[in-house]
Length: 168
Image (cartoon, rainbow, N blue to C red):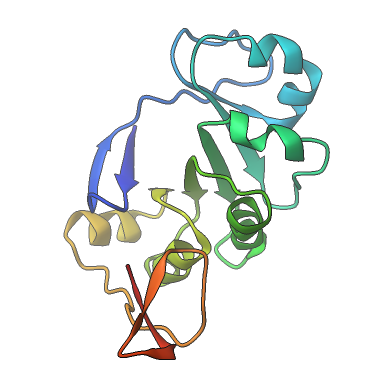
C-alpha cells in the first residue's frame, strides 16, 4: 500500500498495518480502532512497537484524550467526500490536544479537498479515488499558499500584515 507524504510531495511504501479488531497485531507499526484501544488499552500501551489510531467520521476523542500523544499516527477515514467531520477531528487533535504525530486522511479524498486537508493539519494522504491518486502522482495538485485567516499549520506573516499569511 502506498501513502502520499505531504512534505516530500511523493508516494512511498507504508509500514503501517491496519488489523481488524479480531486479528492479532503484527510486530511492527499497527493502527487500531478506538473500540479496540479502549478494550485492550493496558496491553496495547505496553507494546514495544509504534501504535496508531483509526477513527471513522462520527467518532470522537472522548475517553482517549489523555492518550492521544501515545499514538504515532492518527488515521481519519473519509467515508464520503461530502463528510467534513474528519477535518474537525484533525483540527481538534492538533489544536486542542496538541497531537504532534502523523495525521493521515484515508478514503474518499478528492483533489480539490487537499488544500483544506493540509490546512486542517493532515500530513499524509491515502486516497482511494483514482483521479486523485493520478493527480498527486503526476504533481497536478495546485494548492493555495496565501491565507487571510490563521490555521493549524505553521504560518508566517508577510510584509508585517497579520492578515497576509504564508506557510512557514
